[in-house]
Amino acid sequence: MGERWWLAAIAMVLMAAPVDAAEPWPEKMFNPAPAAGDVVLPMPCGGSMVFRRVAHPADGPLDDVLVEAGDAGAALSPIDGRRIEAVAGGFTDPARPGERYYLLAKYELTEAQRRALLGDCVTPTIRTRLPAVEMSWFDAVDLGRRYTEWLMAEAPDALPGRAGMTGFVRLPTEAEWEYAARGGAAVATETFLARHAPMPDGPPSDYAWHQGSRSAGGKLHPVGLLKPDPLGLHDMLGNAAELTQEPFRLNRRGRPHGQAGGLAVRGGDITTPADRLGSADRRELPPFDARTGRPATGRTIGARFAIGLPAVTSQERLGEISAAWERMSEANAMLARIRGEDGGDPVARLEALAGSLPDEAARAELAGLGREIREVLAESNAARDRALRAVMNAGALSGYRVRGDALRLDAVARAVDEVARPTLEKMRKQAGSGSRAKAMLAEAEAAVAEMEARRAGLARALARSTEAYVEAVVRLARDYPSAVVARQAAPVRAGLVARGATDMAELLDVFLRHVADFGGAGAPDGTAWTADLTRTGGAAAAEEAGVAE
Image (cartoon, rainbow, N blue to C red; front, side, top):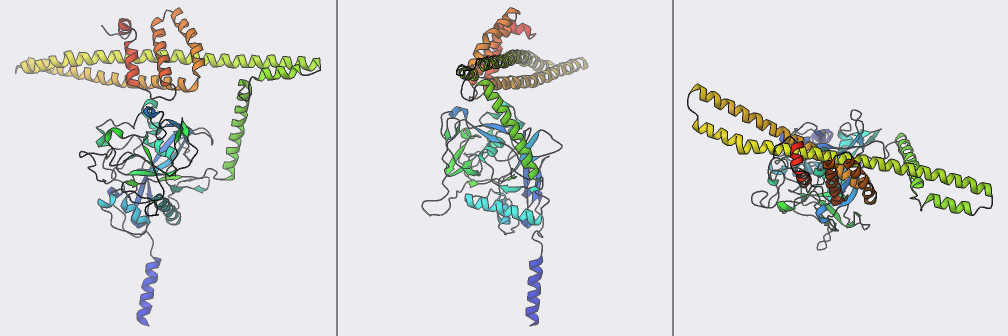
């Protein structure tokens, strides 16, 4: 009797022990590369998981950001061709108005984290820092459910929320995954549309575990060993491929196809060649294995969690959304009526209606109304054309700045590489031991260092002006129909020539050619466009830039 009493008491103590009474994990086991902005959430077994904010500009509850997903080089591909998606984070920060964000795990889910969520409190090691693989989509979704329930029960204040509604752990959508993989709002337009996020400090093997003996070598590697992307996320490409929340859909000429297929897996893995690594990489995984009848898994398929939030978090939030919807609907309806996008020419329909009326006074009144509408349309089109001409002039001016920055950089680079450095090396070889010789050598080294600093400054200036130029090209191609652009090109060019700015007219032609080449769906190429601009104008361009030919 006494022994049974003691056993029962011990059992009750064990049952009453807190779930997370285990020793906290060493930081290197869950965050091997700590950085400012990390959002750390606790986990069972003393563990933790790190998230990063993926922010985007937003103004109002219905504002979102359009994501040009896919690969421009595969424009006709039904798998990874260019298409338009939309992203909107559910969270806001009062300290950062005009912005919304969602949270995405900084690293792929590790084996130690998976075991912790399943209640297996193993001691974390470098081996359990490998990505958790061989799990199905259903397993990943269930782990997100388990993690959310644990947080709500054990650490409710750790989960971010809004308006009384708590966030929840889930897999990211394809659009969320790709927006983050491309660098989100942290990169310029040209960079966002590139094959992958910037890798400025080394080869792809410094950023992604890919196929090859000098990279993955056919094996998964612990998360966080390589360099992060511009958002501070690790292993977005390579290592383990990553499951997403929604079904796989084909691409149908710029939009997702209507059939919901299997599971969308993103990012490539250790079997992906370096030249195929890209933010557009996607493939379909059947949810079930036809051979076993069980949910499908893969030896290189893992997951990365996101934290989302319900769209309608409260009655107050619903009111805000409804008000925004009404404003948007009224504005769209008005634009449609003015432009005739709701079924044809509104004035023609009005005139047809007026002609069918027997009352002469009514016909006259409607005719007068028709004239007023035509005046509104004329003013609207005139305002649009004025704005377009301003954008064209700004594009030509932006090209002028790019050309000047490129020519100045080229001149300084040639002066350093072809004159200053060879002269300095010659002086070093011939320098004597006297104080006079040493002083002259030190003076020459200082002059070369100053020229190198100027070259670096000019390179930064060129990068900024090129970024602005690419943005102008992309915005013009997206915002204005090509027929409208073509109609305004001639008067803008004539105006530049009339002012004696023939060089600007030539740069306008180059700018409009780049707009046409991009077409709103291609891949911008700032390097090639800079070369085009630099070739425009010849000796006159060099003189304007203050560079001797």
